[in-house]
Length: 619
Image 1 (tube, rainbow, N blue to C red):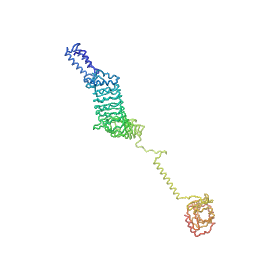
Image 2: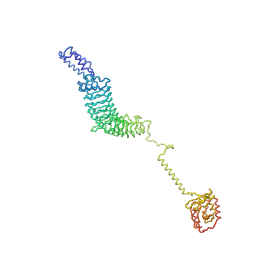
Image 3: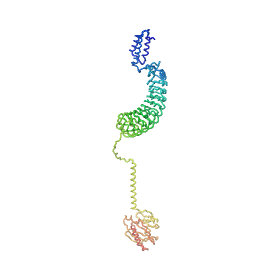
Image 4: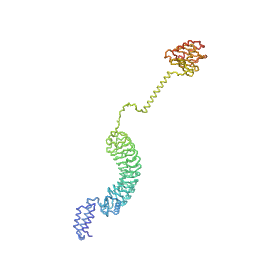
């Protein structure tokens, strides 16, 4: 076999000058000089065996130095050409891509330089592709199912492109896959359950796509999984229980999806290993149910976000166990109860957002102990009481607005004094009365009315006045008032004017007037200190006894009374009554008439009794 000078230079160009590895000019000149020194045109290798041998060793040395010291090398090529299966797999992947920027132009030829750095974004090991890394290349199209032919693939990073279609199922058949980063694309469909079969999978980031359907429970089967980011998709269903019990997960982001159902209270490991979850983001879903108390068992938790859901219940005081927590966001839920005092024990806390809930009570003073706190928001709750001074000075009013009972966080919301002075009496007469005041006033008025009624009753008993009635026989003559009282106590009254007197009858059947009495015959039956008793015989033959009291003053006339008795031949019937007959000054005419009509009393034996009656009537 013969090597001409041109052949030697051609070999040099082929081996020592791939595009990503530019050969330094010094080495190029050295190779060219050595080849000129030992080879001349039309000379054969047999003619100069020693020279050709030295040239061969020198060429190998230069090629070795080329790959060791080349400044443009990005990896150490092992010298093995890409396998046929991987070459065909890459060509199939290229066919499915849309490359507007021509990034994949280098993926051509026989593939001799595919593993030496000549193909963009490709890294190999022993002729097999282990990394495909093409982020931010504006690639469109879809990911081919033929990518499953790359059995040695460890990392596939195609994030921040315009890739669509579904995620290839064949990715789950790659046994050594460790990282799959397809975020910020337009991928659709569901997440392949086969990805859980990748037992070495450590990072799975499919965020910000158009993925739907529930999260496969098999994803937690990978015991090496550290990061799982499925945020900003349209995933539905509940959070798989297997994910809440994973002991390997350190980062779990399921926010901005359509997840529903309760947040299961199963967080933490169940296989005697400590949970290592550091970031848990479940915000912007439709999760419901009470606040999961098992969150407090995630002792390594640093970021916890559960905002914009439908979580209810209260915040557990055991949150103080999360000593590494830096961010906690539970805003826009329906959490009620009071803010735990123990939150002040989480010294590492820098962000605390409890806004737009139903929290009540006061803001714990212990929150002021959080020296690292840079963001604090409890707006739009039902909090009351004063805002701790240090918090009102450190954060503006937007952190506290929407709490009607909260005060002291701005100039427009001052708190009342702790010991307010007694209020000054108001002169306003229109003050509304309380129920107690109304009861007291009503009771006092009732007592006064009862007291007045008692007084009136006493007065009536002490100064009882007679009832007045007209006599049955008609009116009395002028100047005289006659009253007839029946056996049952009834009275008939006849008056002759204001100056008239009063005549009281004690026998119901007898009805006569003062004129009848003046015309009657009369004779003295007896005398006493207070007056004289007369026997009068009326025109119809009826006989009465009349007692005339000695009373001269006008005051005495008002209180004077005359007792009338009906006298029959067989006996004398006595009718006692308080009413008396009162005569005006004209009574002297009656006196004269009675004295002029004196007659002999037919029953003189009764005079003593009449005197007794007269005496008894004095009382």
